[in-house]
Amino acid sequence: MPVPAAHTALRPLWLCRACAAPWPCATARLTLCREYAHDPVALRVYLCTLLYDAAADLYRLNPYDGPDPKDLFNRFLGWVARLRDGSSGAGPGPPPTAPR
Image 1 (spheres, rainbow, N blue to C red):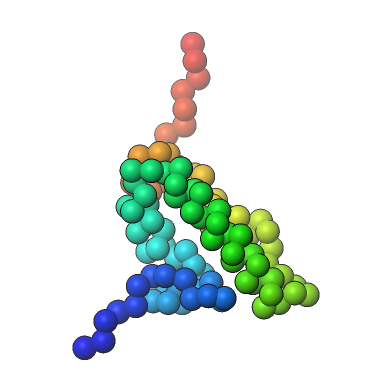
Image 2 (cartoon, rainbow, N blue to C red; image 1 turned 90 degrees about the horizontal axis):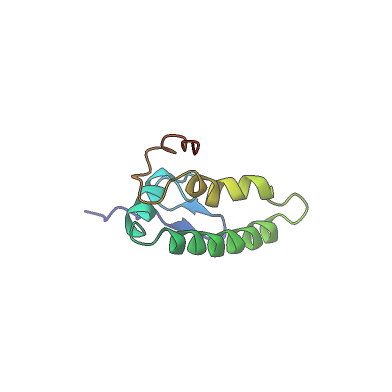
């Protein structure tokens, strides 16, 4: 029986090897949150590196109509920026309370 593909990036297209969604797909995001639960800063640094690589790869594939920087940011880092450190990834959490 074949082993299912891991939810990793298929470069240079940056699609998920398992589900063909733009990577990081939902499963990859959950996996990354779990793997980096102890160090959310390292997760952000890692994703910044991958964002840089993805921008270069996708631009090389289509130099005349390259990737939209805002879309790439949201895809690679926007979802992490909305997480609170130590959260489960379920959502952004409650709004901060104002000091009295």
